[in-house]
Image (cartoon, rainbow, N blue to C red; front, side, top):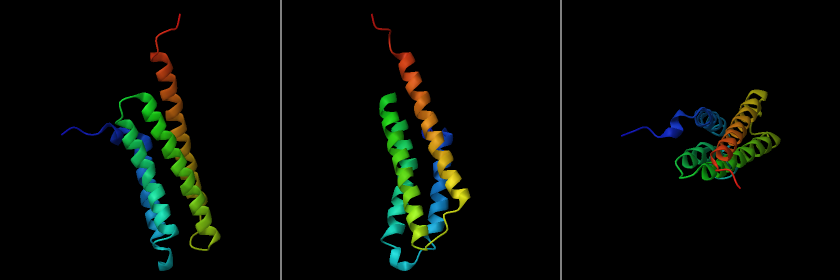
Length: 127
């Protein structure tokens, strides 16, 4: 069986590492948050590499871009939820983790830009 192409994408690999970081953090949340903010944060962070993977297997570049935009939105949710978790005293939203999230957001944006340029180059000229 061949390897899925998303596994070769640096952006997917980086998102996967972020999932591990967030799971470690949410594992330390109070038990009363197990089905609250911790669960919401975990779903949002898992959504990032999942949308990258799903989009990469779609039929068109435009569909891939659509899923990358969704992944970037989920990443914004993760940022917001980590900020809220810090506000509530559940964790410290470290500069290192914030940088990881910002870098991943840039990676996704750069891939979207690249794919949009590629998409425009593949269109036949209009008369």
